[in-house]
Image (spheres, rainbow, N blue to C red):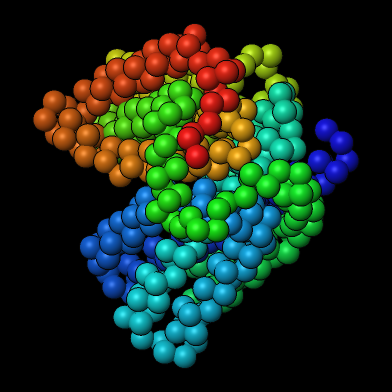
Length: 418
């Protein structure tokens, strides 16, 4: 890893950390504000629905946006767009002071914040392979995951403390500033990528998006990627199956924890799962295992399946909490391996579309998985969901093992028909 790559990685990590600080702060603020102002659980449900719908609606367009605007401009301008969008609820908090207008302004603003996060997340994943390869790419992904995991541990509590002592306008001002700072921190990336983009256009005009091609044309290309490229079919199937099982387990986990223990059990399980994520990503950031991304995926799925089966058999809080740590390790192994596999399996030109297709499959599964968890838990008992999840994870492991034998470099490099 040379000095220039280290600078870009540091800029990306810093921008990502500051923007995720803003994401957590606004998330906790919005949830707190909506309920404290309205006392309505229905409006909280509306908010989470808006969050899911925005993600599903934006994901298919991410490849088009990235090809049009470029990763660098999105990282820079997108954060400033998030910052500017918060001026509306800030103005309402300062001037109007009416609860209904405050809630409406938050509902109007959050889709913008979420949309930029979805596209920029795909953009960063598509950009990292241009800087790193092999073990260095795994370490770069692990560095991003470690930073995110640290914020997951720290930010919910910190946000709660800040919001408890700050007024709405003060909290919004801090959040607005965090997005603006994230945009400024991304400036070195903007300079480097703008130069690289000029060189690429001068040497290969075929990478440019045709001017007559609109949004729907790009959506068609996204599905063409899934239909024609083995890697894309494998990736979307595995992530969909994985998310259905994982989402079902997350849905019934509070009930399971209370069934074998109390609220402390659920808290400990949540914390230990986060610790499994953090320790695994940090370990891979400093010492990369000498195995392929596909094997990391398989190892992660295997560990998760074992954890689901162990939860099914657990009847006491202590083993259930320990299993939560193991589950976190498996999820992190899967996540890092899966991301790295995607980044190294497609040419740079089509990677944003592949990542967009995977994001759409992920969010679609996340939207429907609570139904599976709730229905199965209600009809067959809470423990049945663990067997369901283990079966799905085993299916993903089987598909992954099958794909390892069938997807070779030639197949991975296939391109959709223009």
